[in-house]
Each structure stands twice: as structure tokens, then as C-alpha cells.
Length: 342
Image (tube, rainbow, N blue to C red; front, side, top):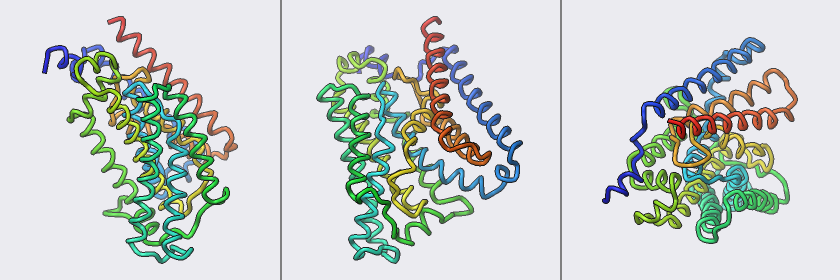
């Protein structure tokens, strides 16, 4: 490998300033999270400080965390994916309909073979949307914002068409009891699945060629191409990964909520982006980590649940999340200016 390639692909040559900025970002996220919990806890201590709230928050955050892992890869490449929430919905509806079809319309008592078929459909559905996004972005050279905005609407419409705008019920009890509400050593299985996805995602990003190429493409796409990286193929695979994880998140949501809902996930894409950027992943590409996204993912989760606890009108929730996202991008720009001035 040439000296130029080593310089381009390196992800560990941070200056002391960058390290201080990264530490400050983690500290800032922690402070905001503690303040949110403190405020909501002071207003509704009975609802906030109990075991049920803790477990349900972790389980519900698991779905968002799986989305955020895929989003981290996408944003590191300086891209964006606005379609993850819609792909989640489409994958869940497709999986639920498949399981019902294999069980003559009532899958509640279906065996694991039917559940496994539903999982394959969910992952395949997510992969199809992700591959479509990646192909249009990498090969047709259409901006990610436009492509994924189109997929956002198309996947939502396709999900509505699949079941005429209705939710899909009759979810296998094997799935809901084991994955949705099952525990292992007191830890919800939903959390364990999300933790496994997170660990694998972090290892791939930090220790493999795929991860190094992801940083390289986001840092300087032309330089990455000159050192021999297939930028077109890599971007396609990154969006494919985001689609597969969206499909998995849809299957997890199906297990937890016991229904494939065509509504209720309107802000999932916004939450995933906000969580990723809050975790330190730069919207300008080339900088980010899965670990940071883990911390960032709890901000929108705690904020949404806290607003419910204090009985704030649900229509304020997307407004609050939009504010959080704008603040996160502003903070990202501040860090970028600080790096450029070092």
C-alpha cells in the first residue's frame, strides 16, 4: 500500500485538538441526557424512575439503535438516508403479511419456520430498497437527499398498498413472546439483538477494510478513487447495509408492538439522523463512530418518552426533535471550523 493510500485510509491520526473535541462532544451528550432525565424525573418521578420505564425505554430504543448503526455508515460517507423509517414500515408489513399467508390468515400459533420466513422477507425487503438507493446514488449520480426522499415516499406508499392502508395483526406468539418481550438474565432480548448489531457494526467500521474505505470515501471521494477504491461499489454496499438494518428494525418493531403499523414511525428517520449526528458523526463525512451513535440514540428516545410522560401534545414531538437535529448540526459545524483552524 502506498504512502498516499495509508494517509487517506488512516482513521487514527487525530490531533490532540480532535481528541479534545471528541471528548467534549461525549461530555456534552452526557450532560444533555442527564438534564433531560432530571427535568422529566422532577416533573413525573413516578413515571420516570421505575424498572418498567427503564426496560421499555431500552427495548424501544433498540429499534432506533439498529437504524442508527446503518445511518452512521451512510453519514460517514457524507450521504444521508431519509427513507429508513419508511423501509422499516414496508419491511414489517411485508413480513407480517408473509407470515399470515403461510398460516392461512392467522399466524398467532405459527411455528419458527414461519417466523424465519418472515425474517427473510423483512431483510430482503430492506435490502431491495437499500440496493435501489445505493444504485441510484452511486451509479446514476443522483444526490442522496433526492434519492432517499423519493424512497421515503415510495416505500410509505408501497406499504399502504400492500394492505390497503390498514395495520397487519396476527403476529406469531413465538416471535412476540421471545423476541418482543422475552428476556435473558433480566435483559430484554430486543436489547441483546441491538447490542449484537452494534458490536458487529463497530468492529467492522474500526477493524476492517470496509470500515477504512467508508471513512476514506467520506473524507475525500476523489482521493479514495485514485488509490484504487471502487467508490461506486462501496457506496452501493453502504446503502444496502442501511436497508438491511432497516428491515431488521422493522422485524424487531413487529415483534415488540405485536402489529405491523403503517403509522407511528413518521419520525424514525429524523430520530436516527439526530442520534447519529449527536453522537459525533459529521454530516460533512469522514468522521464518526458507532460508539458515539449509541450515546446519541438515547437523546431522542428519552425526549420522546419524557414528553409523553408530562402529557405534552404529541404534535410537539417532531418539533422538539427538529430542534435537537438543528442543534446537533450546528455543533458539528462548530467542530469542523475548530478542526480547520488548528
